[in-house]
Length: 112
Image (cartoon, rainbow, N blue to C red):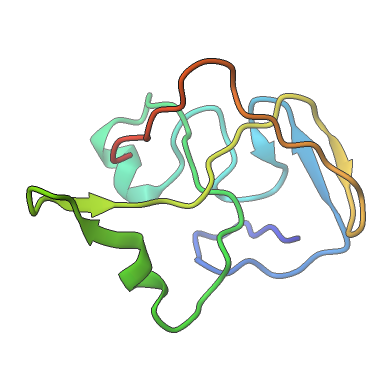
């Protein structure tokens, strides 16, 4: 687990993180109720903060697996899992966490 006060892809590993309901990881540059990505803040600083959760890091071929085309030849951008904190608290390596899918039909998230 990690957090970083700066906008970088990789986050330094920490002994634990504090999750804040509706906000994210305390002390992380991407935490907040509204968008924190520098590019997206310029477009709409009031937009909901829909950020990816802890994607698997740098690896050969990852980008090719995240961008594809559909049957009509249109570019399809895939994303890592998205999530929100519904109950805060401190999390340390080895702690059990529960991930729940929202009720209703699962729809792909558009470009954020």
